[in-house]
Amino acid sequence: MSKKIAVYPGSFDPITKGHLDIIKRASGIFDTVYVAILTNSAKTPMFSVDERKDFIKRSTEGIENVVVESFSGLLVDFAKKVNATVIVKGLRAMSDFEYEFQMALMNRKLDKSIETMFLTTSGKYSYLSSSIVKEVARHSASLDGLVPDCIINDIIKKANSKN
Image (tube, rainbow, N blue to C red; front, side, top):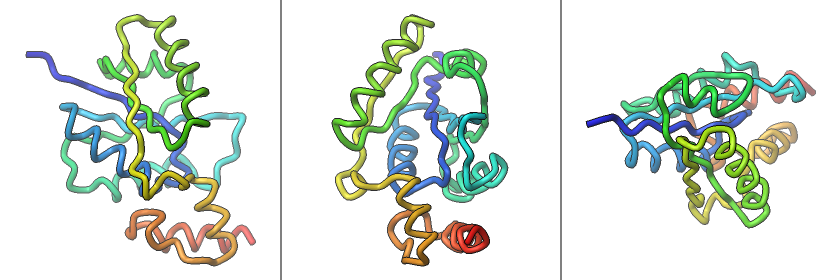
């Protein structure tokens, strides 16, 4: 029997509890879930790829079937490289759906063998984004409940060094 392998892509700058919710749920569906950090030269992230990898690895410690990688280029090419047949995308609201639906159709056009699965985030995280987390951190407000506890101090330290 072949393994069911999925890719959950994103910038994860930083990983949030909403991301972690999707990762945990996907890990219960698939044999292996690649959390794939997109390196996008058009964006200036707060955290380096290595920092984001470290945050995700620490946050998913104990979830045995999660692998953290980074990639640049086309997502379908990365999916093929790791033998994934499904791309997992998290949806918070209808505003996410339009963009993600377009991307799913384009990925399907590029490679018909790769499906996209949409998982809706838990309602308690529907407002949450990495951008909001960074803004809250820049203003020294509490990150409790927004990101995994194990990375809160790292985020605060980096946000304060940017001020």
